[in-house]
Every structure is written in C-alpha cells, then in structure tokens.
Length: 439
Image (cartoon, rainbow, N blue to C red; front, side, top):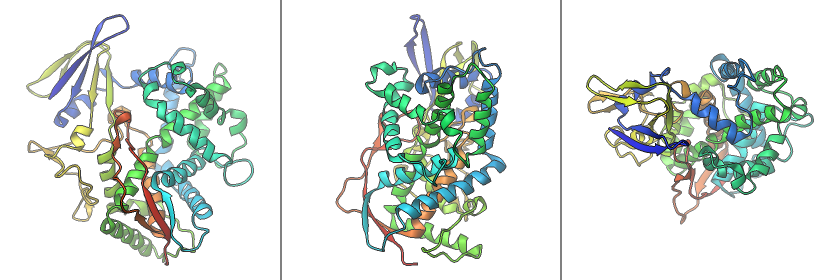
C-alpha cells in the first residue's frame, strides 16, 4: 500500500512524501542506497538541532567520511571492552546508590530509577571518568537539563527555530559546555569511539572548541535519547508479568551457574558479552518491548528523478528532492504478522530455544519484521551496544532486587509526541517497590 502527501517547499514547489506501508516492499526501498539517500536529511537537520556547523561542506574536507567510519568502534570486537566497561559502571552506580541499604522495601518511580542509573553509567562508559573520583559531579542536574532539551527535540527536528522555543538555546549551550575539549582532556577511561572523534576534530583548525563540544553532545543524545525509554519499557513489561520475570531471572542465574558462578547479592557480578548473548528469553523480552514502544520513521531523499521499482508489477515515479518514508510501527502492530499485537509476550521471539526470525505476511516470509533501529545505511550503529546495556541493566535489577509494581495505578500509555523519532516515552511514570533479595 502506498500513500502520498503533497508538501509545499520553500520555493512553493510541490514535493511529495511517499509512505511505503507494505513491509513486503521494504527491501525494494532499503536497497536503493544510491538514489534514495538518508544522510542528506540528517546532515541538514542534525547541525540545526545540536548547534554545530555542517561537516559535509568543503570547509571540513573528508571529515564526514571519517566520522562515519568512527562508528565502527561501536561494533564487532570493539563491543567487548565497551560492554565490559558498561558492566563495571552499572555495578558502580547500583552498588553506591542502591545496594548499600538493608533489605527493607523501598519505593520509587520506575522511569526515574531506570533513567538515573542508565544515564550515568552510559556517560561514564562513553566519555570516561572525572579527573578525581569515580563519578562526575552534578549528574542529576545534567540529566534534568538533558530532559528539558529532549522535550523540545521533536520541535528542533521539525526545524522550528530554536529562539522560538523558550530557554532551549540556553539549555543546549549549558549541555554543550560539559564537553569542551579543555574539560574532556582531564577525563580518563574514555571510550575508543570518543577518543577517535576527538582526534578527528583536532585535525581541523576551523572547527571551534564549542563546535567540537556540540558534536560530543550530539553523541550523548544518540546514546541515551532512545535507550532510556527503551530500558523503562523492557523493565516495566517484565515487572508487570511476574511469571515472565521469574523465567528471565532464572535464565540469568543459569547462565552464571554454567560459567561456574554462584550469584550472591553481597558480591559484584560481571556478565560478559558472550554470556549476554546466551540470554535468549531476555533478548526476546527486550525485542518485544521495542516492538511495542518504537515509532521511528525511516526517511530517504531522492537524489534524482527515477522510477522506483517496488515489485514485478508496480513502480512509482519519484522526483529529485522527494521523500520516501517507511513507518515500521505499522508492521510491528500488524495482527497478521504478530498475533494479538498489543499484548506483551516475553517469548514471542523464541522458537525451539532459539531466536525466532520467521515472521510472514500474505504467506511470504518477511525480511524485515522488527525495525526499532532504522534500516540499511541509516541503521543505528550503536544498536548492539544499546541492546547489551539494556540486558546488563535488567540482569542486575533482577539478580539483586525483588520488584513489585504498586497496585491501583493507571497503566502508562505511549506518549505520541515523539512519533517518528524512535522509542516513545511513557505518558506517566510508574510507582514501584524494590528490596535487596535474600540470595
């Protein structure tokens, strides 16, 4: 199914956005990397959103390609030290903030809990530790500023001038100031990824310090902007289903036991990337929560006039500058693909104790059936790290704590204000209780 919208451009020239609604046609769009480009859109919008000059210009020759290559440091063998570092930092935050108490029940708000732990642990993993001590000061204030900026993010992506958005520009400048080179140079245990990007920026004299800092701030948003709500939803769905939580918790204990580790709450635990890869029910739970909560839009800009072949029988004319868009939420909630699609089923992506990849529509197997991270050249380069850190967080939460949702509270809905931009926020926070497990 195709849908087109006419949009008036800046020159009153009519342009079209064509939505491809049939997931069986997705491969035809995704493989058109040359004629349908993602980077033209992001290279225009990202500088306006995060406050740095476009790097595709001749002012910074070769920088854009080098920046793209730096994302390889989030994948493959580089994922192992990143995963290990994240585990250490999660354990640090959990131990100092939540594991230094007795076994009495404590109350909290689930999104706030997930957000505070993941924000700081991710920051330490990506950017490193401060010159003195193991944790940066002022993380709560920084996260508060980040949330205020993030609330305005949909308007910035829509290219609303920042000066129309109240104090957003001042908040953005404050966030950017955290990453000025003279400050970051004092940090230790910085990831290879950020080290490499800093080296690239230093090779360009025309890139000001504040511009370099803005690039680093953009990576902060990319690292946590979607990961925080994704962590909340995965945690919420598991805690709301005690039997699912019990099974996933036992899977984690079994993987540790198979490695010769008998878990105890008075000891720190480490889970390697290899061990995380064995947690198929946990991964299925996370994928299921992503299916239910993601609402990203995959945008491509036509680089020339051409006829886009959809299948053997259909094609559509596309003009240079027109947009072709995929909206995977429609396939994520398609009852023909996912039975009872509004219901969380923690084992939906498991079949015969292995990952299930066989999903169909109209009797045809889908190549793309779960797309929370984009597609093709626009697929999030940090997706493997994101999945691993969510796994690590939930592992620690389930191993160390008993968890209960408060009774008599409304179920959170998806807040549609971020539709098209990734994982949707909850409409409200959720009250819960937690206590140290007796293990």
